[in-house]
Amino acid sequence: MRETLKMETVIGLEIHVQLATRTKLFCGCSADYFGAPPNTHCCPVCLGMPGALPVLNERAVELALKAALALDCEIPERSVFARKQYFYPDLPKGYQISQYEAPLARDGHLDLELPDGTTTKRVRIRRLHLEEDAGRLVHDPPTGRTLVDLNRCGVPLIEIVTEPDLRSPEEAALFVKQLRRLLRYADVSRCDMERGELRVDANISIAVDGRPGTKTEIKNMNSFQAIEKALKVEETRQRMALERGGTVQPQTFGWNPEAGRVEPQRAKEEAEDYRYFPDPDLVPLLIDEAWTRRLRAELPERPRERRRRLQEGYGLPAYDARLLTEERAIADYFERAVALFPKPKEVSNWLLTEVFRLLDEAKLAPEDLAGRLPPERLVEVLRLVDEGRINRNTGKAVLEEAFRTGREPEAIVEERKLGRIADEARLAELAERVIQEHPQAARDFKAGNERVLGFLVGQLMARTQGRADPKLAAKVLRDKLAAS
Ligand code: ZN
Ligand code: MN
Image (cartoon, rainbow, N blue to C red):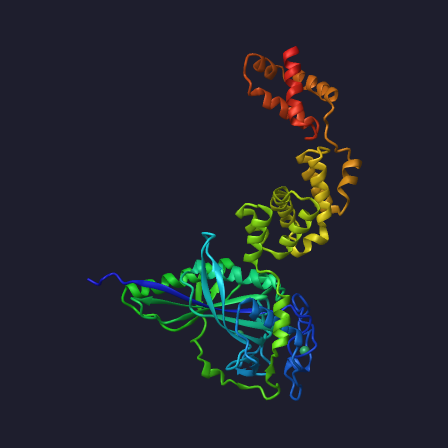
């Protein structure tokens, strides 16, 4: 009988991120291609017409450098663009302009925050380079034809390659989440995965008794869920093969989310198949230190530092601080609101429940929140509640209306006469009617069943559309019941 093997999963990632530039990497075409009619964002340069020459987009270099700095990479003074050659219908030039031997940046890291919330694990970044995207093939089932859309050709990307430091599919997904958050904080990219602005390929192998295993690759996983699921499926497949005494063959798979399967694509290509060589149309890229120094100074606080500051500076629970700092736009919003209404926990409660729900229902991106509902508006609602002019439930309704219509909360309260009913005589009248309509409940209460009071208060609240002061309502009902 074979002894139990000690198996360890080893994962490395290659992540492509679309840089948030207005134009493409080597021409003036708009990089905002998503949803545009096919082949309308093209010119001789990105179509690879003979004689057309590339001109490097400075803004793309700047964003790539920001990403490199955020990942604590080393930035060599000189990097070189290279041609990566392969034949595919979405690549009109027959090569992709990328960087190979001399990438823009190398040897960085990201300190992954583990789910326990206290420890971190360092994941090394092997390299980060600039490259252009390819076009897209569009399959048209009715005609059985495959069409080519070249709008994406030449869109600027960075490719980030990690060392194989990840040890499970969960860890890989967590890494991508935290990388995405970091890049969004630094305004490098929106990283909208549904739009393909962040795409993940993974290498996975199983080390047996410390000996490295054969890698397979899974391509183009475009959601956190896909990353975790696809890697789990492949991890299980490899482990089972090895446990049965079999082997793993080098191979490239694509993830099929509908079938929940990884599907073989083609034999894995080796670097030499691409016949890389320096692009003679582009001079080496020289980065001077003053530039990186300026960019470093522009980098915002990192998510982890921001979370710590919110937690300690505002006395927030760790849970609140974590959720508020997932998105920089939300953390900014929170701080603007607290500057106007210095009750941090109250602001946090409203943001994390009501505002998050409204954002979600409206399918609005966090960065669009302040435009839709300026912090001043949220604070106005908080003040109305705080001063007792409306109750909490009414506050929620007013907030919702202010969010939907963009109107002033104060004006909504005035117009809809939503002010809280704390008028005892008015409530007494309503209490009288509630008791008349529910004689059985009234008798039960008088017979000593205290719990019915809650029911009667609920009835009274309903009659005032939630505007009655609940404590006063209970008192008035109690008085009435005692007197009747
Ligand atoms: Zn172009
Ligand atoms: Mn690439």
